[in-house]
Image 1 (cartoon, rainbow, N blue to C red):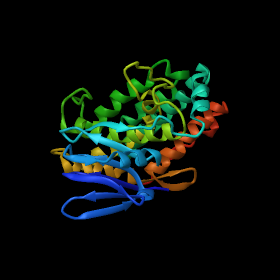
Image 2 (cartoon, rainbow, N blue to C red; image 1 turned 90 degrees about the vertical axis):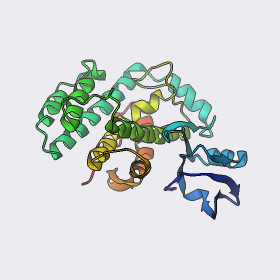
Image 3 (cartoon, rainbow, N blue to C red; image 1 turned 120 degrees about the horizontal axis):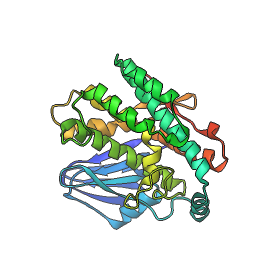
Image 4 (cartoon, rainbow, N blue to C red; image 1 turned 45 degrees about the vertical axis):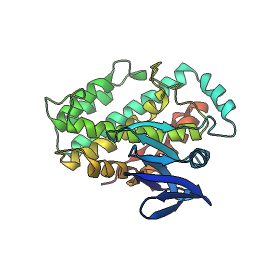
Length: 290
C-alpha cells in the first residue's frame, strides 16, 4: 500500500520519469510513484507536466492544489476510478432511502460517540450531555442530535464564545484539516467506482463531494484532537505540515493498527458493502489509541 504524503511548498517543476515523480529545484529529487498516497501542491509557483498528471490520476494518487494562501482549493479526480464504474454508478443511483438512512444513522452515532469519548478524555463534564444525545438518537437522526452535539462539543473544547462561523486561527486549522480528510475520502470513493456527488444525507446541488462529506464525519474528530493539542497562536506553513501529517497517524480498525489513509480506505469500502448488502454490521469503525 502507498503511504507517502508529498507536499511541494516552493517553486518547482514536476515531471514523470520511469515511474518516478521528479521534483526539479536547485537539486533533483525522485520518488517512486508506488510509494505516494497523496501529492499536495501548496505553492502556485509549481509547474507539472500533463504526462505526470495523467499517471498520477491513473494510479489513483490524490492530487490537491492549494490557492495563493496555501489553502486546499481543488483536486484531480479521474472520470473512471474502477473497471466497473458504470455498474457501480447504476447501483449507487438505485440505493434505497431506507438503507442510506440506516447507514447514516450509524455514521452519526459513531461521530457523537467519538466526540463524547474525546470530551471524557479531556475531563470535560459535557461528555454526559453527548451520552444522553446518543441514547436519544432517532432513525436517520430526525431529531438532529448531531447538530445539538456539535454545539456542546465545540463550546466544551474551545470555549463558550467559540463559533464555527468565526474567522479565527482555530477555525482556519479545523477547516484546513477537514479539507485534507475530505480529499482523502473523495479519492477512496472514486477509486471504488462511485460518484462523490450523490450522498447518503448531504444533498447540496452545489457540493461536488456530498458522499465524502457524509463518510468523513467520524474522522473529523482526528482533526479536532490535533488542533486542540497544537495550542495555536498562528496557522502557517509549519502548522499546516503538522496537519497534513495527520494522515500518517495510526488508528485501530478491523483489529489492526493502520495509518489513517489506510483506515479511510478500509472504512469506505465497508460502507459500500453495508449499503449494497443491506447489512450495517459490515461497517468497520476505527478506534483512536492514546
